[in-house]
Amino acid sequence: MDLYQQLLASLSPELWIIVIAVLLGLTPAIIAYKKGRSPVLWWLFGTLLFVVALPAILIIDPKNVKKCPECAELVKEEAVKCRFCGHAFKGRPGEERRKDWTL
Ligand SMILES: [Zn+2]
Image 1 (cartoon, rainbow, N blue to C red):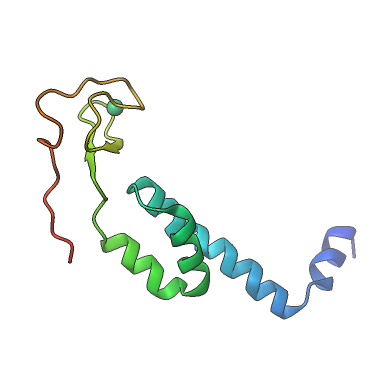
Image 2: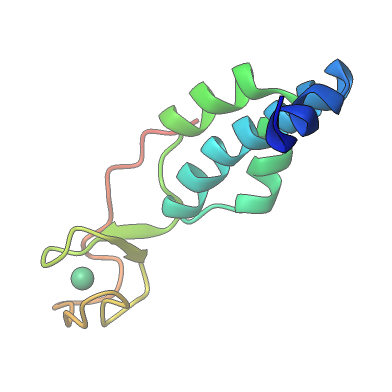
């Protein structure tokens, strides 16, 4: 048994559950960040209630964001310039607003 295996074996099952929950919680947190929502809150939500948080963040609409036509990244609706590629948005802020279908 090498050192790595000894370390894995020394962790209690309870600790493993916590480690796995924290890692699982990162998935909705990353999705939330990309959708302009709080990654910290969604990480907490995902850690505590992963089975609820993941489908919730997948169906939830991005908050106050629009998709850049140049690089397809999501940027804030008020932005006049894309923070990823520098694309300048034409028209009034909010004109390219996505269809709002959330509750
Ligand atoms: Zn862009």
